[in-house]
Image 1 (tube, rainbow, N blue to C red):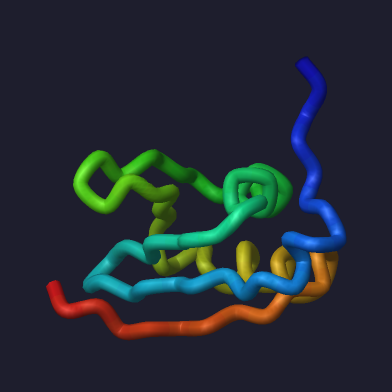
Image 2: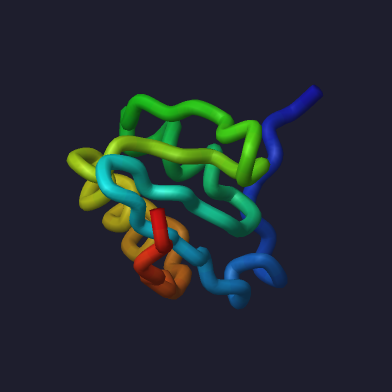
Length: 80
């Protein structure tokens, strides 16, 4: 199986980031690729069913999403 890439159609979809106390939850296609490219520690959240990473590494992930993938990011403060 080959790696999935973010297609041109998916580039128009923004990535939604919900901020918790210490964790950022990322929603959208291509999020796993951005986390891998940024070298950020990540895990799959079983409750929210999405990828998450520590807030301390979020700046690197956002740089990959906005710079390399050319996508918009919507930041939302989640209620813990």
